[in-house]
Structures are given as C-alpha cells and as structure tokens.
Image (cartoon, rainbow, N blue to C red; front, side, top):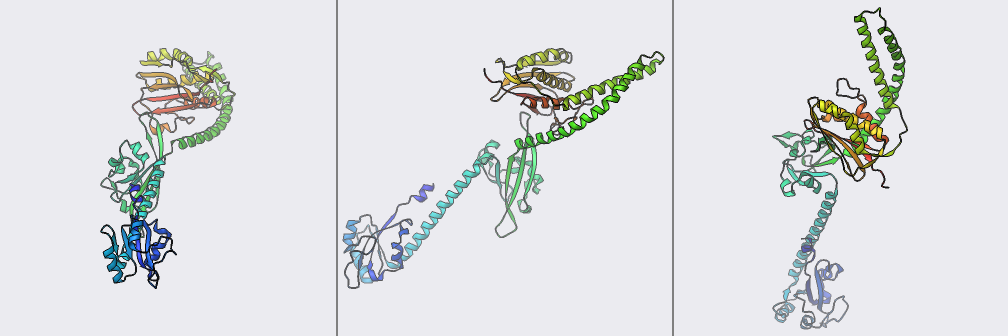
Amino acid sequence: MLEDFIDIKKDCIGIVGRSFALSVLSLLLHESSREAAGIVLEAGVLIDESGNPLQDGYDFPLYADVGSMLAAHPSIKMVFELSGEADLVRKLRIALPPEVALVELPAARFFLRLHATDRLWIACKANLMQTQALFKSVVDQFPEDIIIIGSDGLILDCNNHFVQRSGRNFAALQGENPLNYYDALASLCPVEDGFINVPDMSRENGELMFSETDDLGKIHFFRLYVYPITEEGKDKVVQLVVICRNITERTLIEQRLQQSERMATVGELSAYIAHEIRNPLMAMGGFAKVLIKDEGIDPAGREKIKIILEEAQRLDCLLKSILSFVRSRDVQKNNIDINKIAADAMQLLSLGCQLQGIEVEMDLDPRNPLGIGGAEQIRQCLINLVKNSMEAMPEGGKLNISSGVSERHVWLEVRDSGPGISDDQRTHIFDPFYSSKVNGNGLGLPMVKKIMEEFGGEVELASRPGLGTSVVLLLRKAPVA
C-alpha cells in the first residue's frame, strides 16, 4: 500500500513565455525540488525583450517554437503559458495538438499550489505510514503484553505478544472487555457495570503484582502497569495503555536470594540454640533413664518418666536434624544412576504405600540417565518427597515416580494425587521451619532444596488444589564418556 503513494507517475510539462516576464511561478519550476514534487520541466520556449527566441541560460532545453519543443519531447502533455499575454495564448490554442493541454497563467498558479499541496499530503501520509509500521514492528517485538483501552473501556489495539498469548486473532480482540483477560485491572481502575470507566481514571500511573497458576500447576508472577493518556491540553483521560510483564524468573531469583539470607540467619541462630539446648537435654534424658529403672517409683510415676524420656529423645532427634541442616559440608560429586536410586528408595517404601492403599507407578527412562550428585543424598531427598506424598494421601491414592533427560538436566519426578498445595502455602514451602503438618518440623523440603543446590541442581514444584502435587529433582547431566 505504501508503494502506491510513493511510486507516482511524474507530470511532464513545457513552458512558454517572455524571459523578462518569468514570474515566481517559473522560479518554482526551476527549483531542484520540483522532481521530488512530481513535476518534470522538460523544455521551454522563451523570447527576450526584442522577441528573439533564447537558446540557453537555463537548466532545461530551449526551442525556437512550440512545434519543435513538442516534436523533441513527446512526453509533454501540458504547456504552461507564463506571460499572460492574450495574443500568445490565442496562438498557442491554435498550435497545440488536442492531446496537449494549455494551462494559462492563473490556472498554472492554482495548479502548482494544488499540486504542491497534494504531493505534500502524499509525502506526509507515506511518512506517517512508515512511522506507524516502524512503531508497530518495535512494539510487536516486546516480550510483554501491550494493550490500548479506548474511552469506552474496550480494547482498541494490542501488540502481537498479547494476540499470541490470548490464543485469538487481532480482529476478535478489538472491542473485547480487557477485564476478561486481566481481572486485576479492577484493582487499579474504576469499574462501572462490568467495564472500566476510563473518563473517571486518575491521571497517575498505577501498577500491581499478581500471580497465576498454569495448567501444569506451575505458578507465574506478573506485574501490571496502567498509564492514562489524556486529551491534549485537557485533564480528561481518553485512553489507557496497559502493559503486563512476566516477572516469574526475576521473582524466583529474588525469592531464592531472600530465602538464602533467611536461611543464613536462621542457620546461625539455630546452631547456637541447638548447642545450648542439647547439653541440658542430655542431662534430662540421662536422669530419666536412671529414674525409670528405679523400682521404688510406682507405675504411674514411671509412666510419666517414660513420657519425659520419649520427648527428650524426640527433641534430640530434632536438634540433630537442625544441626545437619545448618552444618556446611563438603559433598562428593559422582556420576549416579537415578533409575537405580529411585528403585532402591521405592523398595524401602513400597510396603508402606501398599498398606496405605497407595497405587505406585514407576515410569523410568530406559536410557538409564546419569546425573552428577551423591547417591545417598539424592536417595534421601527422594524418600522425603515420597513420604510427603504418603502423608498427603492418608486414605490412599496414586503415586508416580518417573525419570528422564532434558537438554541440560536429568530429572526425577514424584507426582501424587493428593489435595494439592494452595498458592499461599507454595510461596513458603521451602522456608525452613514452615510446615502445614501438625507435628512437622518444616525441614524436609528445605533440606531437599539445600542438598540439590549443593550438587548444582534445582527443585521444581507444581501443584493445583484438588489435582495433586509434583516435585521434580533436576540434576546436572553427567558428561558423556
């Protein structure tokens, strides 16, 4: 379409008149910009004060008469008479062939003004179309949703990223209610009868962060920006520009950094407390063991001492877990067969699953993928995950253990059919000492995450309430021998 405006046929003209009577009109024709304006001055017939034809002096060819000029330049379709003399005009009307139009001086002035205006409009429109195409191309390259909302609260325009993410075509999105795609806009914009009331918008920019869970149960984080556009010279808001940016990766990095800082602080404090508590706890446990053997204590007293001993042992076990969690250790990294690790772990837990009515399905990659890690530590991670799934399905369910290879990792996945985890719980699931269980110590999943990070691996959790939970252990691939 743009080429239709730019590639326009030139208008070839000739001029006739007296050299001393050349007006501003002829000067316009002499300017070098006439080519860009679409006017080609092919030739002319000019005479001096004595009535003699000129032969040179201009940057276009001159001829003695009109007939010679037209014979030499058949492309000329218009002849401009620039002197305004009635006698010359009359002679030209007789001499010019029917296919060549005579343009007298007043009409020539009007023609060139109109022609210049028309060419300027075409140039402006072409430039505007080029600018629009460039802007659209740039905006379509942005990796975030950009939509423009009109004064009626409906989608006026959008970029290609939003079109692809919505799964609809551009024509179908125009005129749609943006609240159907971003209900979070209701927190930033006034809403009336189910539509954004754009004229009542504040002129201040707004933003908020929200999260969504995809079909696979993975949580994604987004930041929504709203920029009001006001009418020029007025305070009235006429349009909104909405930008939605996926900040999942950045948010997860920030969460990991915050979690690392919290774990460092908690670790130092926990190590100090564990050491301080352990000494008196050992003394309490020792005295309880002595007292429980004393035959002078009646059965009721012995039962109470037994409870003291059991609770002391439970606390000692918890302190060992805390010290194990906070204590840094040098890990030995080896090439490990994750299929073998999965089979060994499930051999220990299969009876418990069977007694609990849990159906176990093993879907291990036949290629026996090798990862980098420690066999005992990864086995313990897998056991922790399976136990969590068993606790989530006290009345039975389905448990799937699978393995595989991706571009950068080998992986082990534990997937259960339990009640799932809410979004609120998921943001804290790897925090130390956070637990949704009554008697949980909140160190199971943080320990799994810590072990995986020590081996340069990762842990991915996906869950949807009512549809179960999936935890994936990602280990670096072992180099090919």
